[in-house]
Length: 193
Image 1 (cartoon, rainbow, N blue to C red):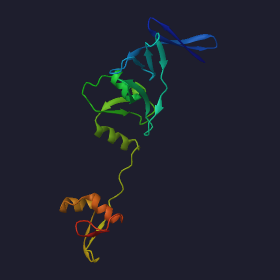
Image 2 (tube, one colour):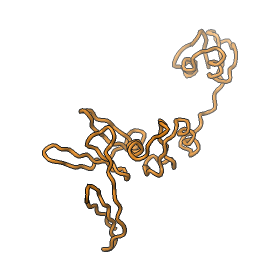
Image 3 (cartoon, rainbow, N blue to C red):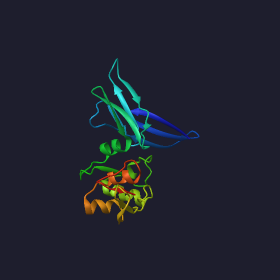
Image 4 (cartoon, one colour):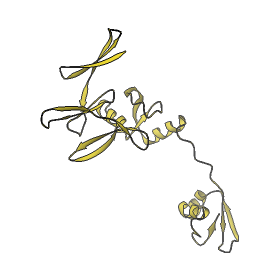
């Protein structure tokens, strides 16, 4: 199997050949990337730049991955480099966000599958629920009991959790946990374990 691209009328025609026979021919439309002059994207997730410096130069950009594992492209605007995720570029240019939703969900949970059929606009809450449903995120570990002690180590009371202390006394969970983890001697006049 061999893939060839041919440009006609400003469109790229992707041809697939198998042992001398053409199997299919698909039109690949390139859309200008919103907010980035000279950059174009197609439904396959390819990004190209067209420069008008010393004649027109066209270049398919190489993708990279960010720390979270998402595919990204570096785009320039006004002399500044912007690192944009592929799934966001695809959605912003091919699927209008009519409800003005802030997040994009990978339906199958695979962040490398950037097919338009696998992407949907959603809320942060929905995206989080889907991550738990697909097993991509694990529920938090059960809260630990906390003992409140005086500075001379006499027990004052037992608490279900640091969050319970926050609800009843208004103390910072972070400060209490720092004492519990021996990163701090005391908080709010007490020792917490």
